[in-house]
Length: 285
Image 1 (cartoon, rainbow, N blue to C red):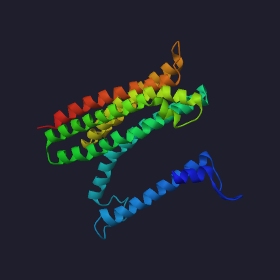
Image 2: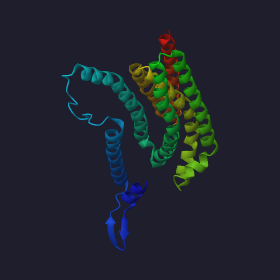
Image 3: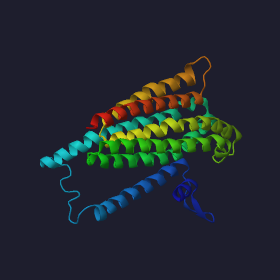
Image 4: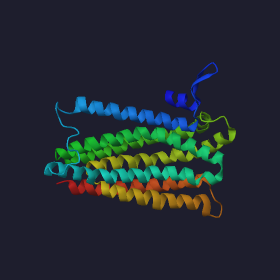
């Protein structure tokens, strides 16, 4: 936040600018600095605290001469690449939605950004449970405790549902006040508050699907997650949102896209829960 303020607005001593204000570009500069710092510090932490002394961290990274290293790299790619593609489908949908709303004017885009930013902030809580579920369910599977893995997954999904209900209630009841934090413009506040109602409903399927996906990753079922994510987000969610926003007899505008997002996330939640039910039962002895 300090770097964003510094590079967006600049700093001067008297009439002498020390750092010029870069506007929106300054946000990109600040983000680049932060992510570079994070990468370097995490690399240092890995080198000093996560690996044995003398471990050749960078030695023969891309060498396939060692069969064990080759198998390890291929296994990581088999599990990891579908995770990355699934995340791309998810993030690109929300980015594309903002772009497709530009024809409706700056007030609509600003109101949409208010709602999506609030949803992104509240999403951090269920996302953390999802990441923990991947680890904990994986531990149970490593112990061949399939009943424990299933119970752990369902417990995590239940925890996320409670978080979703709390977040949804807070957003629903405080929509006007929350939107007012983002802009002094009454039109933007009104648009943002109206879309925050959809953002409140959005919480429930979103938290369920992210928790379920986290549990499924522990089962290494990442390819199916990728397929479900594409169909639910882009085929169901985006297409229904586009229809509701622009093509129906009485277009809903931004609200139509938000309803489409809710439909897509609900489809993802149902499909992933069904998959988790089948995988967890099939894995059990």
